[in-house]
Length: 327
Image (cartoon, rainbow, N blue to C red):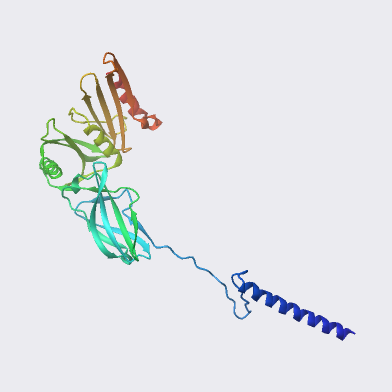
């Protein structure tokens, strides 16, 4: 009796195994499961489906905020995958927009680096800021990346006579310059020069630059705060030599400039006062303006302070500029 039961149980187990195995094959053939694999203790295997890596290119440097120097060699670097070759463009910022200049073409992408020197020549010396664009080529398609933010290129001028240095500097920046002036001052105990280059237009248009002395050389300093300051004061119609003053009495000098704009009949006028702080790299300004109403009869006065003066950290500048409100 026991033998019959054992035989029946054995037959039942065999039938179950065959059924499960056949069902698995059927499910695999009909797509009900994607894989069917039985591993053995001696041979462990795992099924890994690797995702396809999409071709890409990414600029590493310059990617924003760097300060290069004209006529010196710097590396443009990138990382990429699935790219055969690249072309490299210099994006040069003039008058509110970028122009593109080809630096190199057909560079093998796997090199990951290209050495380049920006020449100190027009029109590059008049550019405000720069970016790099790299175009990668992959089977007829193009993949592009550019610097996340702008970088700057400084100019180094060597010589012992500061008057000659500044004169040459102005003429190299603009061939129509007929005169220049400079203001010596210190920033963080470093000797610096504020340069005002005047062209021969009527009325003269001033271009203002900031040079820092390094040994026997002067380096052109550029930054977002200084760019904003120079752009602001160069829009004025009246000329005035900026004044060097320590407004917040912290031992670091600021640059104070003032000017005015006059309009035609019934347009009133505006007085401007601006401060550049090397310590904060910020522009602080006030505008005290008057204009006639629509009937051109009554003067309307208004007073503006730059928004960042609401920061408690800048209260010394705010109080200094507010004294111009009554002028």
